[in-house]
Image 1 (cartoon, rainbow, N blue to C red):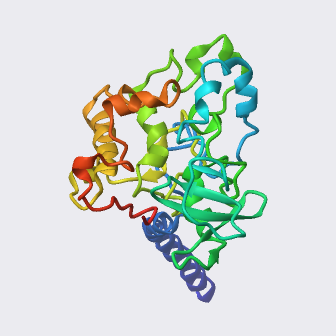
Image 2: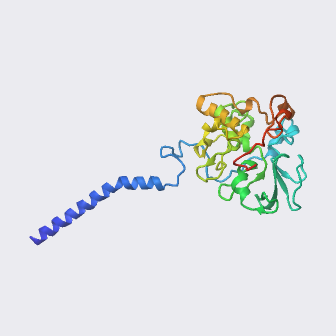
Image 3: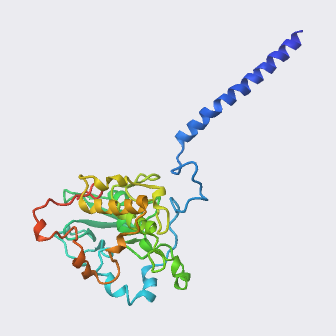
Length: 305
């Protein structure tokens, strides 16, 4: 009798244990979802994404290699293009105001610039607003993603300052010489969403990487799905607090991404070609025309100028 009762109690205990475990499963799933560090929606697996988020920077083809074939079109004008001198050694045009004696590089235009000091491979310290203090971490966590090429997702060091071809044309292989359709921004590859993503990786100021929290994409490579990880509120295209240049970028990006527009940045902006032509149809936001001289300075909440 005692043995039967003990057996029954043991069996009931097992049933209660199993029932409790089953009831806990939904709670465990919820906690796991809430505590997950994955930046992707549950339904979006590696097989359905196309990105390089958090991966090592590839061994990409450099601009010097590209110029072997593109020297006649790109070579003569590249040094006049702002993308080429967004960061440059001290003394390289365009000229800026007074710099500290120990500055090695400059970031920005003559109207808005900061002094930089190289402090190691792929590392700059940026001069603080007080004009005296060198800040060793600010450049890596705020500026590197949009002013250098090949930023390491972990160390935030860069492979090259300013823009190399890789920044906008991606990790091209030599077969693009016979397959032009594989080259982002090439003559045979004109996908509007891809184009605004490539430009938006830097020009959608105000966005941030979901995985890193930094104000620039996490190892975006041209051709990737930028908005998988880079979060930006495109509804700010009518935000009066945003400066007109940024708002302009938001407007065109939203029109392409949400409204099916085929009009992209490249309709007006030419990176390669004759840079003087932009003054024929465009106003440089750093060079306001005489009629707008009384307007306040443009400000960027990301770049802090």
